[in-house]
Amino acid sequence: VQVLRIDEDPKKGERIGLSVKALAPRPEPAAPAPGAEGAERPARPAPPPPPRVGDVVQATVDKVESFGVFVRFAGGRGLVPASETGTPRGADLRRSFKVGDTLQALVSAIDEQGRIRLSKTEAEHAAERAEAREYMAKAPRAQGKGFGTLGDLLRQKLEKK
Image (cartoon, rainbow, N blue to C red; front, top):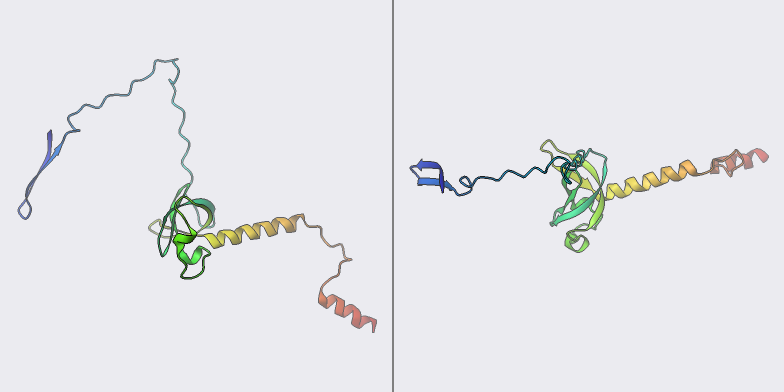
């Protein structure tokens, strides 16, 4: 072994730090011959960008606690509080979520320490709003001969009298 350090602490006594790995030489990786198969390593994919508030991410349940669900997603790890899971208040989250389940979650907040808070219910609302916008964009517009509003119908009836 190799002695790494000696600590002389009067309260704890003398302590000696040892290492076996420090003595063993590390073998250098063998470089393949130029032109040989595998000479060039494939480029690593770029890490995903860090999440921003408002992003909807595909998350995997990592851990279930009574106060919320910890999830892991591309770009980080965060907490979906119990109030944002879409379950009734006081419900046992372990019955609703299992480790490995996937869910859509919206990044609702990132604090100054980098902790990420997510919301399953807000992700569902965001999906519904996007679907409604898509429908409204595709829906045909009324060309002046529609039913109109209730106020328009009442005005027409009063004008006839």
